[in-house]
Image (cartoon, rainbow, N blue to C red; front, top):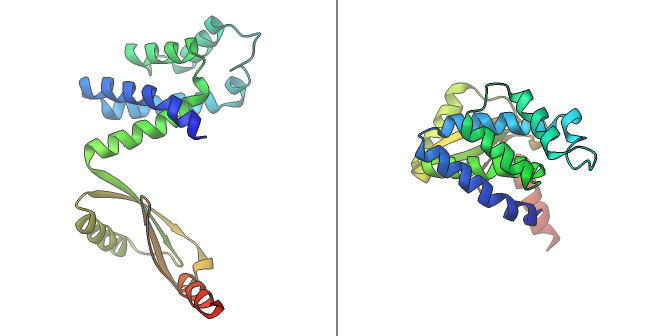
Length: 178
């Protein structure tokens, strides 16, 4: 997997550079999201890498599926991916592109997992505290996981704030086992 990400990185950086130069970061996010959805479609995925399907036929299939939802640079990007046989990298390219975009915009992603549903006001308080802590805007994905028993776990990047009953019980069990 690390190898695919390494190969995908220059494509993501090129897309990001084009988007930045044209002040079209959101547009490229949309185009890459659409491209990923099309490439993951079973009917298209079965033709990618098929030796009986020419690059020209694949290009026609993909560009036909997009219609006018890709601009000229987006179409060129798709053509380059096809010519270099890199369509399987599209999910990695999109992920890397979005990381570059968030970094540029000063945004971090957080995942808040709570044992019970939490209200919008509580989410906003958590987000305000996280934004203060990290000095950046925080986008959050909120989930409910009853297995946590109580409390919440917040994941921001590679940092985990575990304030769950399950986490405390696991810590106590580990301490008692020593």
